[in-house]
Amino acid sequence: MALPRMLKVQQHFDAPRVDDIPTTVQQQIDGLNLAGKVKPGDTVAVTVGSRGINNIAAITKAIVDALKKLGARPFIVPAMGSHGGGTAEGQREIIESYGVTEDFIGCPIRATMEVVQVGTVEGEVPVYFDKYASEADHVVVAGRIKPHTGFVGEIESGLHKMLLIGLGKHKGAALYHQAIVQYSFDRIIRGVAQQVIDKCSILFGLAIVENPYDQTALIEAVSPADFAQREKELLILAKKWMPRLPFDRVDLLVIDAMGKNISGSGMDTNVIGRKFNDHAAAEKEFPKVTRILVRDLTPETHGNAAGIGMAEYCHQRIVDQMNVEATVINCMTGNAPSGAAIPVHFATDQECLDKALQTVGFVEPQNARVLRIRDTLHLGELLVSQAFSKEMEGRQDLSVLAAAADMEFDAQGNLLDW
Image 1 (cartoon, rainbow, N blue to C red):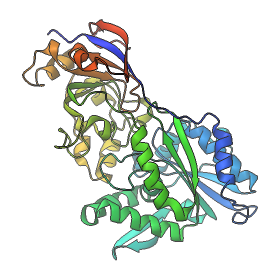
Image 2 (image 1 turned 120 degrees about the vertical axis):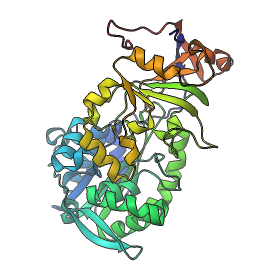
Image 3 (image 1 turned 90 degrees about the horizontal axis):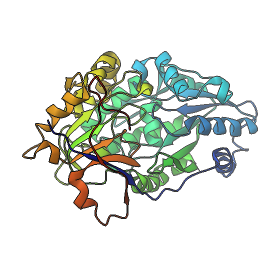
């Protein structure tokens, strides 16, 4: 089959960046005037989630160092629902793979799946909280503010979600995702978060916003009383800064790798246009991508392929690497079982592309509108088929880095690296 020729293109985004992370974190925490709240010897649980937040090890170390200056005794708690196979060992392994180790951070890591019930919302929904965090004098919640992959609201993914899904662990995460079906995302996230704030000694939150190049753009310490208002404001900023595909209509999107460190759904639904339906954009949702082919899993996802069910095609290597149990646990916990469904798969990229391009509609394969990206978090550079050439004319936000060339394959029929 004749395949499209591809141009290498760079996207230009506005990209503010935090250059001095330790100083910024220290200044933000200093601004909260915590000396009267934190007594020497107080224990402080500091959360670390499962997402691949850029500079997360450096940010976490800076939080720990600032708490030590106050005389506190901080420790780390992995704060993630069912990632890591829903085990304490698996969750510890994940944060250590991000560089959050006891040696680097300078404090203990205490991982558990045990929770305690601290309240009830909506008259029947229990509120659960990490056991180790519940025993601490204070809790610091650190999290990235960004659009959620499955819900829309004034508050989506960030500090509130860490209070529910992260610190609620597997038991809480599963329960809340079920409760959302009945009560709505907004009611559950606000209700549970407020119970946790009121009863669980939350000291402050550290909100992180990233720029379109996956760099740290903003770090802000937020008092618990201000979580709701500030998170709404920062979500607007996060949506403005998030990366996007440069075109609204795509026949085939080739994604080199997906994983939990890239997005909670493996590939960000806000980028691929599948926030509301697994295999098609909603009426007013863009981009509209006809077919998705995923080539690999990231090493950091530890075999968790949650979200693979949104792709129509994948490489055989994903099926071979997939930790089915961890993937199913994660998708069932999030009440999205279809995310664990295995797409049509073939042994080589050549065959995957041939088959996928047979199902994109009434267009010759060599003329198809094809994009190839590394993953949905890194969209600064991408490969673009010649079919987009006219649409690129006059675009100040796009630059051609390399002229159109044939797709290149190795002897096994797999695409070469960029």
